[in-house]
Length: 281
Image (cartoon, rainbow, N blue to C red; front, side, top):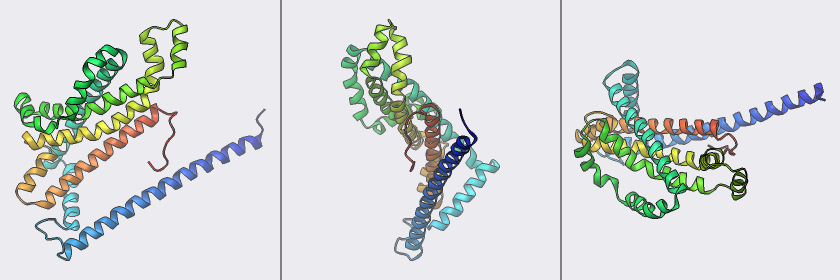
């Protein structure tokens, strides 16, 4: 029977745990912000003193001013908003296609060993090929619209999902498989009730990597044949030697990738709730 003192003890313990977690989060954020400010200060000092010429790198203060202008432009519906959301859509569609294709291929190769022996060497060989070498061909094949950027993102991002899906499905405990077999479970029941739950941590590790790779693929596609997007803005600014605009677009790309990666992490924590978390993440 639970007494008032036991309940009070549990509430105190829960509050203490939450306080410790918030304290760790605050210290981590403080450390990260301090590091960022320190790096910006070093950057500003090197460029303001002339150690690094301004035609090689703009001052940090100029980049921050341009970044603030671009963020304001995005919020107020200026021209930068179109470039920002063009790249965002390309990344998300490329990531979604990579998840569908990567999980399907990984599950196929894991479930059917003859297929794995026949196709996996070619999957590895395709991943070893620099996809940027095919970027001009992808533009020729799929045009200058969203499709070529999405295909480029999938070409880069699908492989880590394939490999992690295979590794996760192969990590299923043999005793669990024997138990399901003794219960006359079908192949699909074993897959959905045992193997996929076991594979989820591995799969989400692949999803986190794939989200970042999708951003890289989308930008490469914009470099090779784009007329909109943050990659296009970066390339155009570099050609015009407007380095502050180029660095601002790069910062927005980094922000996009970081936020989208953290979104995958948050979803993983909700779905794979039994996995231990690193306090520093």
